[in-house]
Length: 287
Image 1 (tube, rainbow, N blue to C red):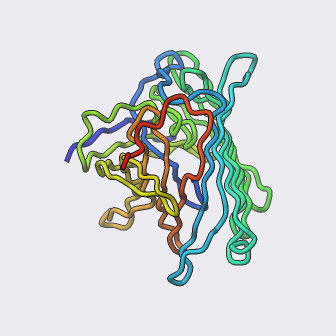
Image 2: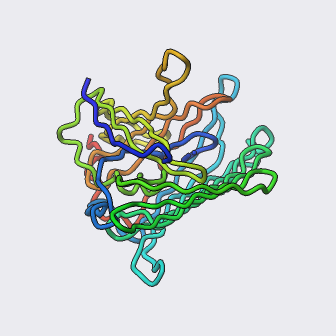
Image 3: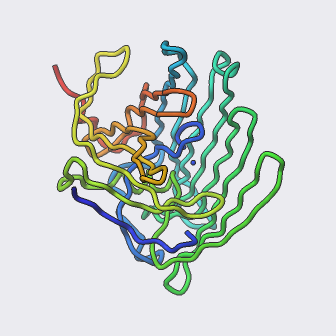
């Protein structure tokens, strides 16, 4: 089995609910300082807006659980050009009775996809937490300042420093959308660093291959690349699938479906609309 590994220092969650997702989604190795971490953006432009419909599996039935929105805007950060990438998930009134979810994720990145700032505000059930990470690049190193605010309002801080590039879940998704999977083989593992408000941890993504996927309640079928985000648990380091991603096999690399395996059941997210795309949607399978 092929494996790609990214080294991180020892000091180094989720498109949805308590899980790291998403979203999400595909990370590749780059080295060191801000200059070295620069990567050509081949997939998106400011003004892109993606809408999703969320579903929960509740006692053997699927119910509409809410919506999600991913938007990208061209802005200024510290008086320099940047992208503002925001992901908002909102549970419906129906599912709020069982599990309230109000997640807001925000990231600022340079035009060359270098992380600058990350924030996740998560209201999940009765818990409200805030993760933040600030990135700086000095003397050939990446320095990350972490801050985490728990449900009781208690604040904890930490700092990380590394010679390697590090990302949060949103900036990694943006970075990964410009990947070239030409040489990927099913079963190939991608290992990557992910920052949150506490630290940076190594995570694993597995490439599952290509598959045609028909969207729910529509006649649209996409040709997709399929990836699984996994965790390793227990003394035997058993592989546990957390989320499966279906990504369009075209220049946009849009996440059109997410299957999430949660503590309280299974959830799915389906793309319902996409505007402001940089490229034509050539992954749509014609009848």
